[in-house]
Structure formats: structure tokens, C-alpha cells
Length: 311
Image (cartoon, rainbow, N blue to C red; front, side, top):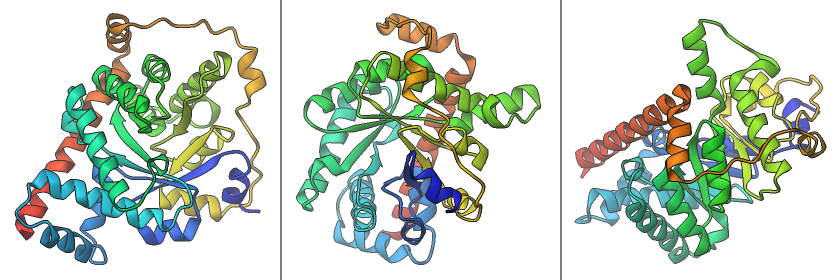
């Protein structure tokens, strides 16, 4: 078997793309999207008619409403391909507004349900800010499952699990990027800082019995992916899925529950003050969270401008 086939024995593979054809090629269980991926997709000729149809169908509605329908339209097409779930992201500009994030999550779910999709096939992506985590806590109690994104450190992961979030997406590659920039060194394999961060979260969750799923995300190379074999899920871009499919090197599980249970990690207690302080104490997590929100906001604005140019 190739590495992709072997990896699927240990981990649920998720496609990190808005490209339907790429999904069909690698048969992932789930799929994730974000504003940057959707923006990239609708600029391709094969997806432009889809965007134009959404604009025409919802003429006279707000740009915000058109984007919601566009995101759901992509999600609906993806769900025709994957047997599992699709993650649809809330507007990053709402990252510090709990009430608005809750309203957006409810609206997206309502659009999916109006199209005949059960809510257990949808994950609402929310930034792992304190306000975003509180929004997820509310939505989860309503049966709306959440994927906590832009997650870079253990305190964020602990707060998400305590809130009952369905899934978290620690950003392996962006953690790696930060340390590479700071040190000028490329660190591969088990010592990769992004890999170490996810392993730490995995150990904590297993040791203390949290049900929140862990989905490693934002990979830069296949080494990062293979070092996390055994993680609940891994969301992988098409180019890295292809590299895994092209290799037949042996893949083995690197994460296991027994080792986690035997660890000496201590339980963390977090209220809002402790969360904000511990996040602030981690310059990497603080910088990458802020940067990630800014980048997603910028791509949402670009998507709005594209829609307005075509309206």
C-alpha cells in the first residue's frame, strides 16, 4: 500500500481544499474549507459559474448573505463527494463577538438543513479565541457541532475541550513557520515544534478523558503528517495527499492512548483570566492567532470585492 492508504489505517484523512476534483481523487472521509480556500477556488474558471449562479439567485441580498449561501453551496457539493462531514467557517471578523458568532453558526446550519442536510454532517469552524470558545459552548448545547480553528497552544485546546467542542484543528505548519523564522532552522521529524504541540494536546486529552477530536492541520511537509499517524484526524492539502500516494515507505502509528495515560502531565484549570494570561505568555500562539484572523479577514474582504465586481 502507498503511504496514504497506510495512514488511513491509523487516522481519518480529511481533504483541506475547496477543489472538488481533488477530493474525488483521494477519497477522504471528511473535508474542510476556509475563506482562503474558497477565494482560491472561485477564481478558477471551473468554479466561476457556481459563484455567478449564487450571485444571480440572491440578487438584492447583502454581500454577507451571498457569502453565506456561497459557503453552503460549496459545502453541499463537497458532501456529495465525502461520506462524512464538511467544515464551514464563520466570518473571522466575528472572532471576538460571541453573540454574532452564535448567530452565524445558527444561520449556516439553518441553510444546510433547508437543503436537507442533517446537522451532524456539518462542523462550524470558529476561531479559538475566548469569545469563539464561548460561542462554541452555546452552539454545542444546541446540537451544532464546532471545529475550533486557529489553535496554536495547549491552553486553547484545554478551553475548547472544557467547552465541549466537537473538534479542534491545531495548526502544525504555522507553528513550524514561526519557529523556523525565529531560529533560522528547519526542524523535521519528531522534533518539529508543530508536531510536538499536537502530541502534547493528544496526551492531555487522552490522559484526562476528553472526547473532543483532534485534527492536525496546516501541514508543510509529509514528515509532519507521518509523525502524527494515530491522531484522530489529519486535514491535508491535495499536493501533500499526492506525495503520500506516490510513496510506499512504511507508515507506523506514532500516537497511542497507553503512552498518554502513563504521562505525568498535570491538569490545567482555566477561567477567562488564566486563559488570556497563558495565551499572552506564549508569543508564538499570540502572534499566529492574531495573524491568522487578519489573513482570513483579508481574504473574506477580497471575496466580497469579487462578488461586488460581478454583481
